[in-house]
Length: 324
Image (tube, rainbow, N blue to C red; front, side):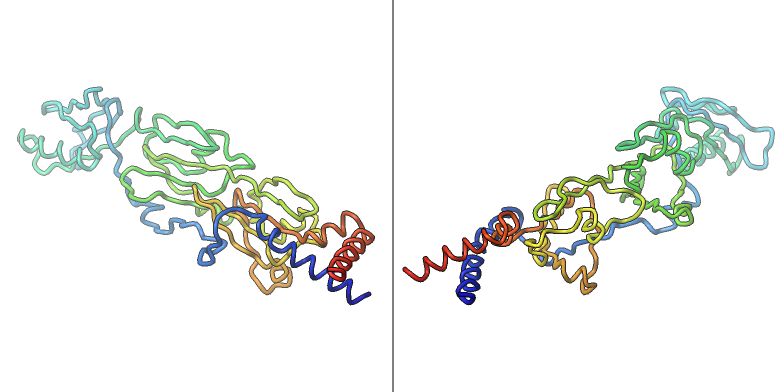
């Protein structure tokens, strides 16, 4: 009888196996795709801390102009809306759309053509900019108008109220003239964060995103959506404790980690028992991750109906096998 009971349980498990596999009808398994792809943070000091940022001039900008070595020649004025600047001793010069360096070279050339100064070392300083503002989009939104020179990232974020608890600490900066976006991780350690307080220049766009949530579905004791926080990375084992562990019918070695990148979903099978025992790395969760924990229908029936239900099912199957 005991042997027949075990045989019946095995037969039921085999019958239920195809249905358990069909519970997830999503993207194919991509074994070559790692669970965690590191963010491409910008590390080049020449990009993060440029020695000089060449500001682009616009109509309405207030500038201060001087010639090195000639203290009597200096000028403060505003570029007209048509893009011209009126400089002493020469005709108005079109500078709209030029960088400061290009405008300095052009005015020096015009001063030489007018036989005022030869090879004049013209210096231009932007004291007020009306069009070259800093724009913040995403979770932190706003603009910083009339920025002269540069400010630090933390100062700019503070002008719009700083970051919210649900705002990601990974900041993206789109800068005119840079082919690639600048990615900076503010981190959670003040000693580390100070290195992320990079200069921000007129025309920069700062993009902040929501850190998001992750989802526990399946044979977890506690299911639902749980917010990620910026205080520290959240790993699978930490999510395991948040979900109050798993039911005993859970197939711990078939955990489905479903990750969304843009419009593409990937599926990775994680052997949870190996993670718990330290034989595999503990994956770090990302926003919108889904942790689906499949379960055995037989074991689930035992938990829901008790031992009597399991024995009844086993005896029914045993009788069917014996008399057919």
